[in-house]
Amino acid sequence: MILQALTQYYEDLVKQDKIARPGWAKQKVSYALCINASGELEQVIPLLEEVGGKKPQPQRISLPAPVKRTVGIAPNFLWDNSSYLLGVDTKGKPERSVRCFEACRDFHHALLDGSNSRAAKSLMCFFDRWKPAEAAGNPALQACFDEITSGGNLLFRVNGVFAHEDELIRQAWQTAYDRAEGQLQQCLVTGQEAVIEQVHPSIKGVDGAQSSGAAIVSFNAPAFCSYGQEQSYNAPVGKYAAFAYTAALNYLLADRENVQKIGDTTVVCWAEGGEPQYQALTFAALFGKQEAELSEADLRDAVRKLAQGKPVPERKLDPARPFYILGLSPNAARLSVRFFYRDTFGNLMKNVNAHHERMEIVRPAYDDFATIPLWAMLRETVNPNSRDKSASPLLAGAVARAIFTGGLYPAALLEQTMLRIRSERNVNRGKAAIIKAYYLKNTNDGCPKEVLTVALNEASTNPAYTLGRLFSIFEAVQEAANPGINTTIKDKYFNSAASTPATIFPLLDNLCQKHLRKLNAGSRIWYEKQIMALTGVLGEEYPSRLTLPQQGSFNLGYYHQTQKRYEKKEEK
Image (cartoon, rainbow, N blue to C red; front, side, top):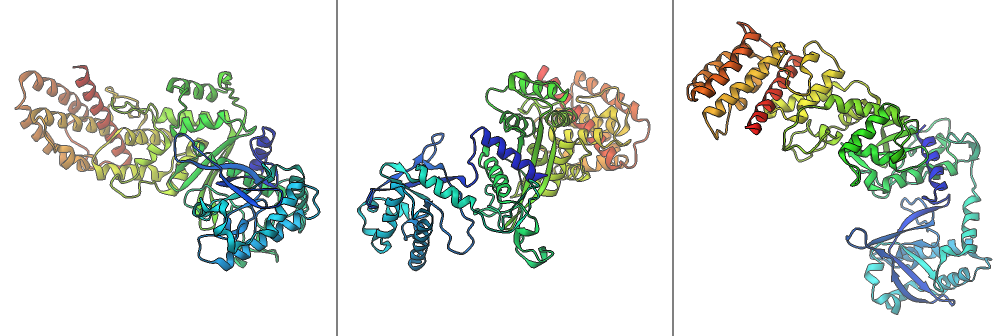
């Protein structure tokens, strides 16, 4: 299913001329070697471009597809690093560099001998005349010898025209590429009989994976093989399908604006048809990567319309369009599929909108997020003082799947959030929103719907919720009686009050009475009325112990009441 969806996406991109056809791929190139008709190197020109005012970067040019290298010598056609095109580098192994050059020369002869192209003849003259031992003294290389031999890719420019743009040379390469030899089997992706790809092209851009590239389909040990098949013959995929799915995935990963990291998982998404506006809205709605021209109100309006099955014509969004989300994690030389989601775009937005509604809670004035993005939600489960701020990979994947599919939130999400509350003795907007969303989806009588409100529910009679509110008022009284106090009852008694209120609240009540005596009459009466109203709901005895769901109610009561009193201060 994943490979089929990516192959279809590749074909959509080809129709829009956004991606190279089979046998070709975008490569980063730093310099062009300019040779004349006689094959002499006359000049080296840089192929660097500035992007967004940053340091000049190599250009990405459509060139013959790269070979997959391990430790052996394998040249690319018409482009490569200085080891292959010039026979020199800075690796300190001159003998190997010469062998690389000789392999490259023989490879080009095999493909271009007999070609009627003048550029091809000039290219062959270059390979036959070039002597790697004399490269350092070549006048064309002296000005930039160190830069050229440091590892960047080079290509050929013959008589003022790039070699890869010569029509006869292109035909020679395409003929050689299409003349595939190998085992014929039914391709698992296309369903047609095809030559099976023995080693699939590399996938680059997954955070944490090898920089040289990794593979989704790979077999490199007898333990992974079956029925006498070796390497990727265990999962027969034709050469065309192998090229197509890897080219599409590399295209997605190369656009870092549309790539998101969740824990150790790299997330990409795409819509059938290849239109980019679907990706842009998804990343804005889920991860807060908002376009400059898309306001928060427009984003929420678009998500709500799509959730209701209505199109958004001004942004050319169709709720019936099939949509895919893929999460990949590094695993040595391979990639692990953390999750794969397929549904209509409207259903995805319906689930995302429902998640945002569950997460909606009164927010402090200093909080800029209208909705809490997924990365900020997961951040609430991590120790803020830890060196690695990433959430657990398993938790991140499970939460993402729950949001995409509209399923239950994982229990680990609540457990980690409650653990952070006990450790930090603080209930902020993100943690309160997680508790609210969790129990709205994973219902429990200990945290009933009456406490799962956006703002303070003053009509609630839930004991745990009322205790949380009462604790917040006790804290407010202490702060009013001791202006500028650094440590409050929250820092010392919060965890005990939330778990064993019967042992702590009598003590807090006595402390509150002492603090009330320090206040003027007006403030004292105002606080006493609130305390009497809440203690009247609780009755004569406090609960001896609160369960985990009841502690969730306590935390929500504390958060709601605290935001209410901050709201009062702002009004004053």
